[in-house]
Amino acid sequence: MPKINADRVTANIEGDFVVFLIGLRINKLWRPDKWAPAAKAMVAMLSELYSAGPESGFLGHQSLSTFNMAQYWRSFDHLEAYARAKDQAHWPAWVDFNRRMKSGRGDVGIWHETYLVPAGRYETVYSGMPDFGLAKAAGRVAVTETNAAARDRIA
Image 1 (cartoon, rainbow, N blue to C red):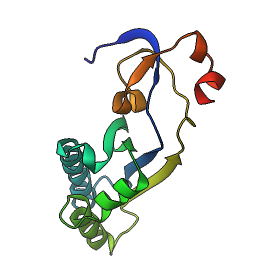
Image 2 (cartoon, rainbow, N blue to C red):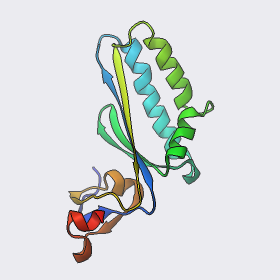
Image 3 (spheres, rainbow, N blue to C red):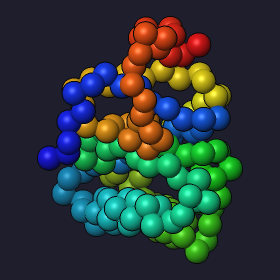
């Protein structure tokens, strides 16, 4: 079990960053030939991203449910470079996924949303939580008198 931080904290990241939400939806549980390779590829991609250095631009991720997560990136350019790199895990998995889905695109769903966050235009708070989300990916600082309210943290 992760260490619980009893203090009230907020995330701390300098500069712009990207929040990338991504997930997989199993529409036909009886078709593991369609969804299992994609699920396995997600695990491989995370392993690859965590072993890459900071120059990759990957800051970290937070699982939201079994097949859904938030990823944090330094920039859209970093995210796109990883997604399109033919020598990285994503591109071959994407090609394979599309090949498998030709005859049954509704068997498994995938989704993603990308948000470009300008410097200082985010707000977070965590209390009684292990390191989580953006604070886990980028770092945390204590909530103080100067950043106690959500409006103070986002300004």
